[in-house]
Length: 463
Ligand SMILES: Cc1ncc(COP(=O)(O)O)c(C=O)c1O
Image (tube, rainbow, N blue to C red; front, side, top):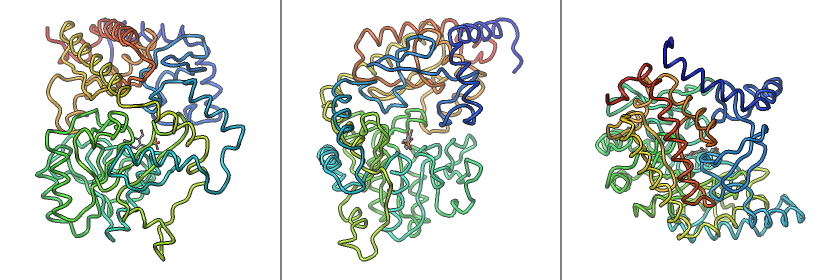
């Protein structure tokens, strides 16, 4: 869209200040691009004109290579529940480092973390560790196929479960969606053959799921779902929806697979405990590694024993050079021990305050937008209509010009770091005062962006 008048002035002003504050980041990015496509190693961390290169983290705060400080409301996409360099985690990890990072054989630290997770999440009776959430959902889906001897996994339209081929399907919800959206390949290089093994259903629509299962259940191994889809927009499951899925899975003899890679932080037993719904299998990751690369998948013993060569003559193959390595396990165990129920409640309370106050700011400024989420996870949407499906959430972001990108940059200018998705994630070192700082930055940035909205997205303004 061609910018004129106020919108282009606002955009220019935000970019000029960003560039002026981040001269070192720009220089690093220029060098990085020589060696790394887009100067980095993750799609989600790239943004224009160039990402802020962070140099150090301490508790709730980040410092960039130019010396600017930021309140970190992203926390490595929700994984750093204790923020950066939490002293006890550092001490345990440093001690382990002196005794060996990984031995190429079984070692004790993984037993303790497995035990803690199994005690907290009753539907997980046994588990296996991986190095990422991607591998965790991949192995969980493979186990479901092996157990049921069927090929198809149903995923939600707009659901994200990592970057292996079988979940790179319909990651962006279909805006023209009917109740039975067709599976769409999302990324180049993913073979069309994966479409033979994935079906799509809209989130929060039990009737659509029932219709799908009625027709295809004999070929369906399981349903994978994030109980509150985070990159889908933190859209909440409708009351009774997850319970309804459980009942449908039972009725049609398919497995229910929860991806709690992000939502585990919301209660000590994950979102499944909040909703009192037990899946057959669960994938977790992020917070359980204490800041190190991690994933895990687990569930009913009967399914997980497929991986046991002492039980199965043709056991499932699962390997990974750094699976269950001592660093991740030791740091993860301390991180999880520190995340007791009271601590979770405290950060959930801070997240809810953030949500309420951002919604009040939208009202005061006359902006038709809303902040949505649960507890310590919150997300801004550019609509004030209720969101039910993940297509609704995606639609809200359409026709908003560069609003999301400019909000991210202006928050950076004001010392708050988050992604251009407009996501906010509270960590344990935060207190009321950090939330107040975040709110002041959000209020200031939104006020500054109003002239931009008037031209680029007038539907967002009440007057
Ligand atoms: C819900 C969900 N599932 C899976 C993944 C993939 O995890 P990882 O990035 O560790 O591979 C993510 C990562 O953001 C996620 O949010």
